[in-house]
Length: 183
View 1 (cartoon, one colour):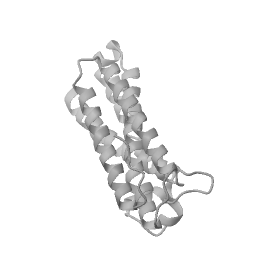
View 2 (tube, one colour):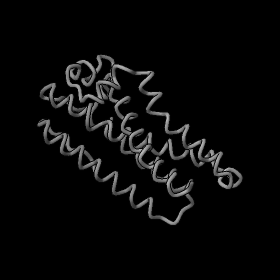
View 3 (cartoon, helix red, strand yellow):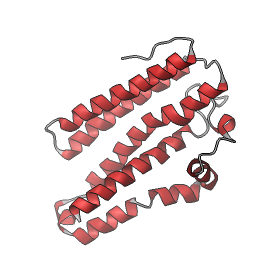
C-alpha cells in the first residue's frame, strides 16, 4: 500500500492513517509467527522501519495546503511510525539483557526493569519544556515545533521526540504487564 500523492491534505492524512493501520496489521501477523522472541522483535522492528521510511518518502513529496494539517501530521501522525520503531528497539534491549542466569535471578531482572521504567523521567529531565507541553496538551508552540524545518522536507523540530515519548508510553505499559507476569 502506498500513500496517494493527492493535493488535498485531508486525503493525504487519511492515507497516512491507512498506512499506519497496514503497518499494525503486518506487525500483528509477525507477532503470531512461530519464531523465537528475538526474531519476532527483529521482524516487527524491520516492518516498522520500512513503514517509517515510506511515510518519510511520502511527506517529502507532499505540500500541505495549510499549517494546521502540517502540524497534525508532524505532531500526531508521523510520531506513530517513529514510536513503533522505538518501541521495538526498547524490546530488543530487554532481549539482549536477558540471559538464562538473569531470568533465574528475579531480583536482577526486576532491577533492570525498574531502570527501564526511568526512560520517561530521563526524557522529562532532558526536555522539560517539551515534556510539560505534551503533558498539558499544549498547542501554543505547534507552528514552531511541528512544521517543517527549512533544511528538511520530512521532519519538524520535535516530531522525533514526540515519537520517542509515545514509544516510552507504550513501553511502560508493556513493561508493567511483563513485570506482573514475570516477577
